[in-house]
Image (cartoon, rainbow, N blue to C red; front, side, top):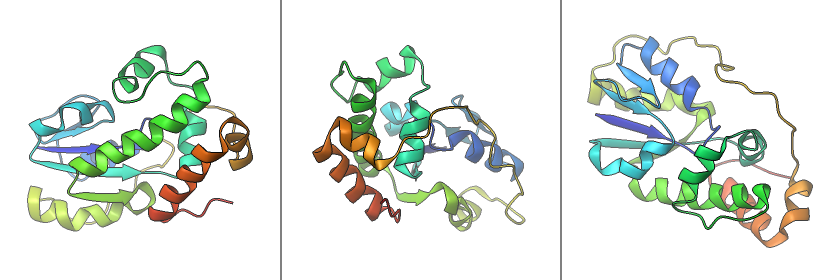
Length: 174
C-alpha cells in the first residue's frame, strides 16, 4: 500500500483523484485497497509500503491552510508547538511537517510534477496507460492570498527558512 502525503492544502485531493482515474483504489484522507493520499496519515507512515512526499509552493499552501479547521490544527500540533498566532503556527508547521515527510518518504516531488510519480507507480502498482487529465481545482477554497512580505511581518527568520526550503523544492519566492 502507498501513502502520498503533503502539508494540508498541498493538492492531495487533486493527486488522489488523478491516481483513482489511473486505476488505483486510493482515497483522499481515507485508505483504499491500494493506499491513501492524505496529509494526516503521515503520523502512521510506518504502516505503508511506500511513502511519497508531495509539496506545493509554500506561499500558496500556507495561504490556503489559513482555512483549515481546529481538528486539523490539533493534528498539526502533534509535531509543532501550538502558537497563538495561526499564521506563525502554520509557517512553522509547514517546515516541520515537510521535514518529517522527507524523513519517511522514498521520493519528494512537486504537485505540479505529479506526472513524474507515474513511472514509479507503473512499476510498483501496475498502473497502465497515460497520465489522466484531471481538473487541478478539485478541492479549491476561497482564501486571502498571502505574500512573502506578509510572512516576514510575522517572523522574518522563519520566512527565510521557508524560502530556503522552497528553493530546495524548486520554488523561487520573491
